[in-house]
Image (cartoon, rainbow, N blue to C red):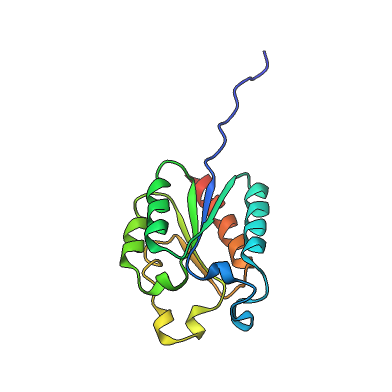
Length: 155
């Protein structure tokens, strides 16, 4: 008799982008490159599909909205890839929210935050994150999704 059981589809990966990332391709291309947020999402969708996951992507300039999305992710996603933008260095509330879903978190920064202004060297997210990728351009999103898939598959 053939095996009719199928392994359940894994929960999707949640890709979150914070403030000003909607201006990618326009804002400081010398720092962030010429790729747009649409390019980032397309890369992330391709990569997630390659590693066997769906992807939900969202961007906001409103911290409360980001926190609400993180809270809503509990039980709904396999993991989170987040580029918190400027909230990286300022938001204890965001860091507190990221523990709620109880999933692996990958922190991504397009630029190398450690080569920039001193205030950008501290991250409230890094102590919570399973991994941090900075300075790899938008390829960092691909790296983060691949690593997140490894972490999820290991559990």
